[in-house]
Length: 459
Image (cartoon, rainbow, N blue to C red; front, side, top):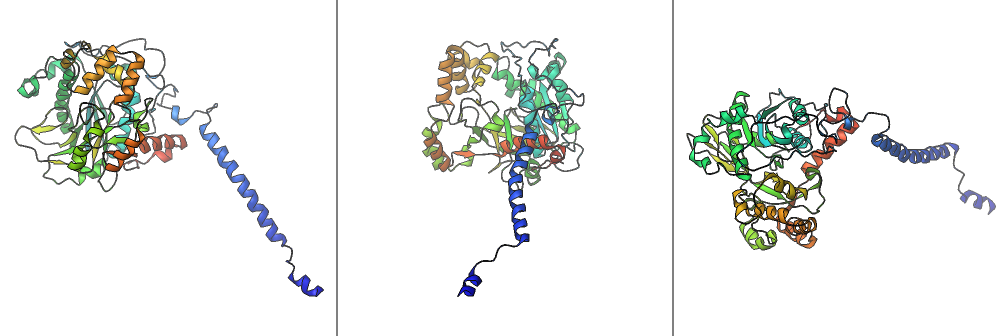
């Protein structure tokens, strides 16, 4: 029995097995410590120059146009307009998206089609640079920037002019004199907007700039031209890959113009600072909704505001570069010799980040000198919501403005949000956020990770 008892007792583990177990435990202990140390080193700002703070070959750590002190000299851009609009040269002390000298885009690529974007802007680098980067990732090769205000200041324009594929055009007296002789300036469809302030004046400038951009696009051998504002991002859903180039490549050759229905940002907080990387919820265009859903949910979708969208609802468009092309306002293109063959995209959209920041209320107020009355604001603004926002920003206290902003713009009712998301009125789109965050990480981890783009890969 003693021998039987001894035979049933487990034998002691071998020395080899014990060594293996010890090494395994040591590895499991060191692995999280190593990862934690690596994460700490990535975030460390001690005497090492971080790639995020590096913006130019000059070895300066300060991002141009982002220092807290105002510039010592000021450049006047063109002559003052006949309107009472005021251009405010605000400044930001912290860049939301630094300019990287390690952007490695192939601007001479033979890939087709070649796409350009034109815009008229007075924004700063913190808005223009992420906007350009995102669209460059989608396949845009050239940008025609018609700048004034902050965008035309020396510190900002110096950076913009240093980026390959970017053409900066300043609003000078010479430019205005040239545009006054242009074809559309003397056409009746645009004349009804002449000599009116603010939004009307901007509409005229955009149209005249688009007319010039067509000529520049043809001279640069572009295939497609798109007019966008710097608070708009294209969303090429429906393409075989997340690429504007692929989307337009699939357009039939007999199509002259492609319409992107607009989706409007639906902010869920009143403290948004960087809309492109903080906003993910959008209200879909009625062109992308079943009619019974749109009409059935209209009241809940507007939340007491004048219209379904706070601002415009007719989308933006891309035009194929061809003879006799002309702008037809800021949202469309036309042709002098024929009616363009136009298609409306069923999945792709333009994401409009409107009133995403509380400060957008006061910035619009500060740009225009209209009286805050229901009659006078009609001189400055085309849209009902813009008029109401201007009056509130001009007459209310800070607390009253914030309450109005929360009531009319911020989507704080989570139950309603979920209901409208399930119905398809609202939708979540994370692609722009991922693009911005991915680039920040790639720059932090090293330039090799940033050497790839379109559809997530640099060319």
